[in-house]
Length: 170
Image (cartoon, rainbow, N blue to C red; front, top):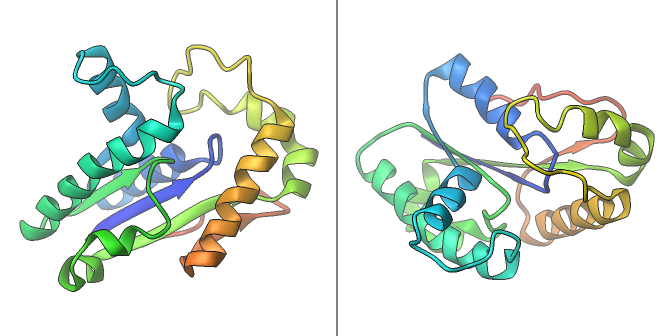
């Protein structure tokens, strides 16, 4: 089984992936780790903040990893904000049937009420070197974008509105 966890920055993708890895023992790939490995190794000149270029670049690599895991019957979790909502289009039917997908989205109401908590928990799993540019309005805009794309593409999402809970399981 392949599990894809998408969503805007700071929604808890890595936290959910970590929880599922501990529960099920699946291998896990973080697109952020893949991104930094490619950038630091010199295998791409794309800037770390250039999401428009990073998204298709990282997805092409990630999709091929997913295909390989599926072909080999390996269980894998992939988490990251570079997974497109139309991900199924990149796979044949047999591979797509092996994939479970969820997108984590925080509502505007939740973000306005809990922005300080979101910032406080930003380093629970990974060490964000510099998170000083985290902006409430930008985070709301990004979450709104992810929610709209989920609805447009008809993919499952977990809308965090009142209380933060990652009770989703595969």
